[in-house]
Length: 355
Image 1 (cartoon, rainbow, N blue to C red):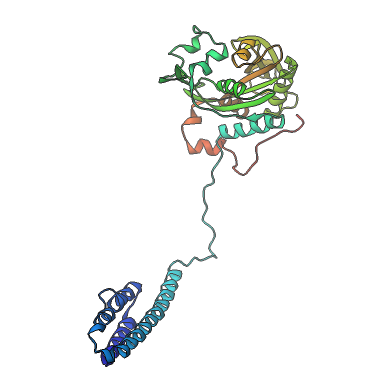
Image 2 (cartoon, rainbow, N blue to C red; image 1 turned 90 degrees about the vertical axis):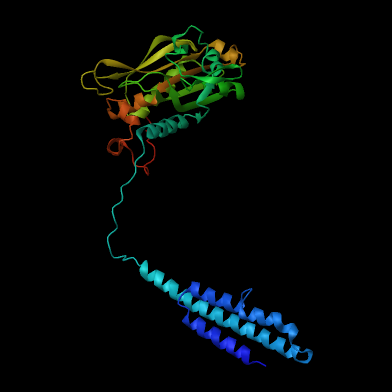
């Protein structure tokens, strides 16, 4: 009655002993316990066994199934342990060997400058705002009191795009000033923000790029004066360049979005390029008190709220700080240049306290 079961058990145990890996083990399992396996076939034929023998036959089949499953799992544990040992042996690492030198990365000078100016202005209470590179004509020009005939609005200077935003032509923003407009519209004063980011203009040479970076600053509050503007920018420039007595000069200029407007110069030596020395002056950024029309365009009453704004090229101040003569390597991806001018990614941004 059980001779065939004993034979199946013996055959399966022999096949398991011969299985050299988990794939071979699975083949033995399927042959014995699969849908078309030997034990499954015997279970299907249980109905043909005489009724008086069926109970005993069924119990024997169930016992055989348990023994087969136990034998398969036992063999699986042995094969898995052998496979793990083989993998460990193959992947063994000699920890006594010296570590292979790996090239270290560096922070791009532009990224480092943004970190530094964010740290300096952050200490003054400014927060960073960001916005879209594609802007509407109103945010980029009209709201900033830039007239239709202004040269900056011509196709040879500005990248215009198909489509519209709020019914106006779309452009690749020529400055980050649109974020000043968006901030004044969406936020109640007082406001103190900087807006670093990419900008675009149709220009390309050793000192200009069609894509470059700017940072704009905006302060809106009651009783803001030119004195606040001069103190803020003087402290920033001395902290950024690390020169505590850096000469800073403010001279009258014109920008459509500020009144009065001022160019900001720093002292330098024209012959040696040394900042802070010599009797020469170098223009560094533009600034001024926010024009009443710009405030009105953003829904602010100029009789109650006043403010100042400023903007500078991030590439420009980076080149001055590090003595770079050409703008183009900033965007060429030369690893040698980055290794020379890049910064340690683990070093914190420079913040010169007490400048």
